[in-house]
Image (cartoon, rainbow, N blue to C red; front, side, top):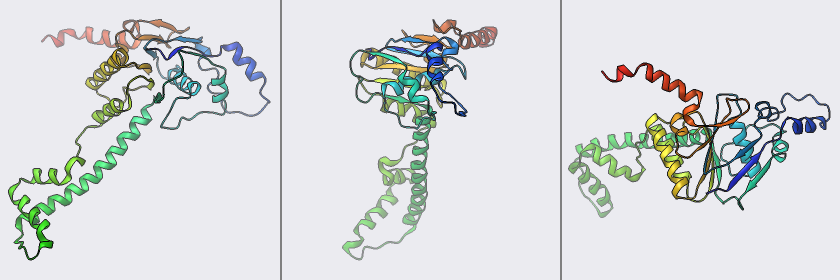
Length: 286
């Protein structure tokens, strides 16, 4: 599914004309001007999965945030943008196949990190409660509790549960469904799987952050399936070889000048991994 069909950034000449109109002031930055034009990156023609690849400073995240600004996509974490950001986005041209679906959004590594911190805070609270339950369990096992009135009935039931159960089972039952024992990587993947639904446009800024190689492969498959079967479109900035290998993805190489479309196997980062493992392939055969 295509919601975004194409996107054009202002070229060097249009940027120059705009900057000439600005009254002389002491600006420390004209960002995002002069970031993409210096690499002659002027147009993206989208596929269901489009990837912006490049090293740090090449502008792949800048391009993603400009598209999000121009398309007025939802965002969670604030983006540090200059006073020129909205003006730059207004100079861009965007072609769509109708309205951008509700729920379309940009997801950044800050969003995932904030989610992981929130989960950690919840788990810290659960850990505190769990420690208290450990102590309560041992106290209940030792108690000589006697039923003296109907008001004591609930406490008596808890005493009986403690006597009949192991410590771990007692604590888990008392915590109920609150207890979650996921790793940071599992929580990061859960964020994507819960945030991404059907029939929407998603911009993902370096989604591989906080994910192990296994989880990156799982995420790549999830993205591929969401685009193929569930009407989603993705624009992704990444240098992860697992994400770059998504079948049918169109990859813009921002390391090249001018920016060009390449196969994932032609990319410098991927070739470095390939050469490294090929040089050591005999060690895997031992």
